[in-house]
Amino acid sequence: GRRFPNIENTYNSETKVSHIKLQSLENIDKDENLLATLTEKHQKPGACIIAVGAGNPQDMDLKSWHSVDVDIIGSITRLCRSLDVHYISLLSSTDATHKPDPISKEEFTDYKDKRLGWWNMISLYMRMKGLSEKAVLTNLTPTGSILDQHAVLGSRLHVSIMQPFNIVTETSRYGWFDSLLFKILPLVDPWLPEKYRSIPVRVLARFMEIDAREIVRSLDAQSSGITTYFLSYEDFAAYAEYVENLKKAECEADPKEESNQEESNQEESNQEE
Image 1 (cartoon, rainbow, N blue to C red):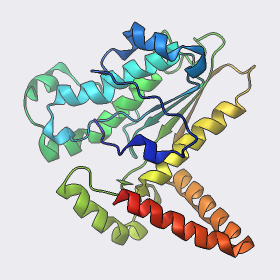
Image 2 (tube, rainbow, N blue to C red):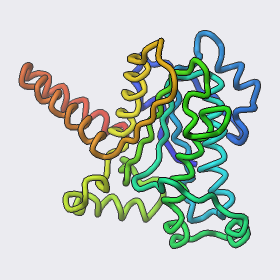
Image 3 (cartoon, rainbow, N blue to C red):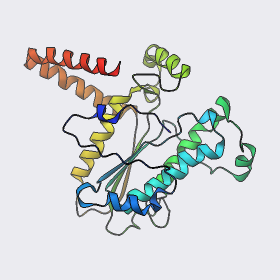
Image 4 (spheres, rainbow, N blue to C red):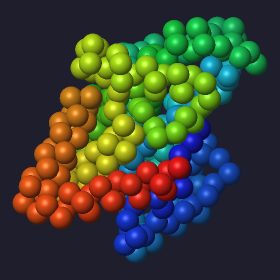
């Protein structure tokens, strides 16, 4: 799966974070103990953010990759719907195949117990991301139909599909490839089409958090059906620009704020090191 830093470092000291450790995410929607825990009055979620994905699919066989990026995502979506959340988001990718063909039995057989390698992984990547999106969209309703968006009576659900291209983290999580890529991206980003430009992981994470909070807050209690939005670099960059302009305005209004901001950035940098 994905590797993340200590989650407490992402939030401020006033935010309560509850850790739930599971041995496996497979068939998570059938875990009655987990469902009971999540439906307790004081911690029933209103939003579900799905960021599950294979960390190194090139080192996996096709079935294992499919299990993580499709089967588990479908199971998490069913769990979220059983909790009656009003917001679900999925971390996907730019150019995910719109109408992907399912992986055939022959393909599973061809790659059985066989490391995919970089070439096969890259050739299948956009299709697999499309299948990840389909795993969410087809598990929102009892009929499993993307088009049947009013099948869940009384539902009012917003779905955000996040489609970044390259996500830049503070440290290299996956070895030499990340290290090399992160050095190249600042040089090539200005020359790339906008949707293929990289986005810092903290900007993306903050965007996903705010998207969830604001959508849940604004939903009409009388509304019904399912609304789906696909969000890309343009949306993430607009948020980053807004935050930057807000910081500049605050610093201009109060010169002390600029000094405080520099100190805050330095402290954050020291923590990351």
